Structure formats: C-alpha cells, structure tokens
Length: 130
Image 1 (tube, rainbow, N blue to C red):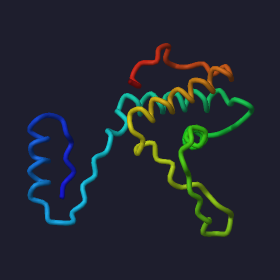
Image 2 (image 1 turned 45 degrees about the vertical axis):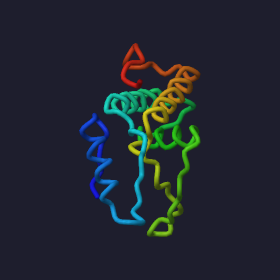
Image 3 (image 1 turned 30 degrees about the horizontal axis):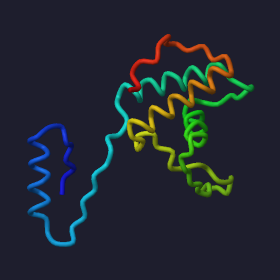
Image 4 (image 1 turned 180 degrees about the vertical axis):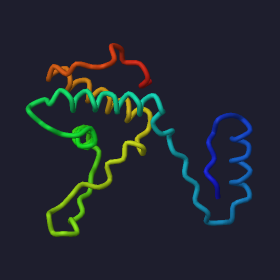
C-alpha cells in the first residue's frame, strides 16, 4: 500500500477508500508529520554555529553535535561494533524521523545550550521552526 499524505479532503477520501478495500488483518499506521524543510535548514545552521564556537573546547563536527543534542533531548541511540574492532559507534540518530514538535524541542535545546556557551548565531531570529 502506498504512503498517503493527508493534505486535503481528496487524500482523506482516498485513504478511507483504501482502508475500506484493504484485506482483513491489514495494518494501518497514522503518523504525525515529520520535521519541515525550514526546521531542518535551521537546525543545520545552528549546528554549524555551535561547531564553529567550539564550546567547552569541543572540536566536534555538526553531525556529532546533532547526535549529542538528540541524546540530550531524550532520543535513543543504538551502538554497533566497528568492523576493525576499534570500538562501538552510534547509529540511529535520524532527525528526519522527528515530528514537528520534537524538532521544535530539539532546536530549543540547541538554543539553550548555545546561550549558555556564548555561541554567536548566524541568524538573529528564531524563524523557520514552527
């Protein structure tokens, strides 16, 4: 069955008809919308600003900062063992799986941390994360 985005009445009608015609024991999932493109753009701009500021002497790349902020926000991470025995590495930190409110909360966590560590934001307003 295809993924149906409920953008209006016609998509809702199509989804309802698909459910009516679905075979017995089919599974239906209704998920909250994921992050918006402006939220994603905002998050990566903020992560670059934090990485450039090097708070607490941390020389982390933006992707490492993202994993740290997601962990700080309560999102779970799994670890896998490196192929060469070099130790575990994190997997599963996917901000693309966050819904709009979760992404908004993550952005707020980044702002809060940055404020405490004198990060200079490239943008002066908090647009794009509603």
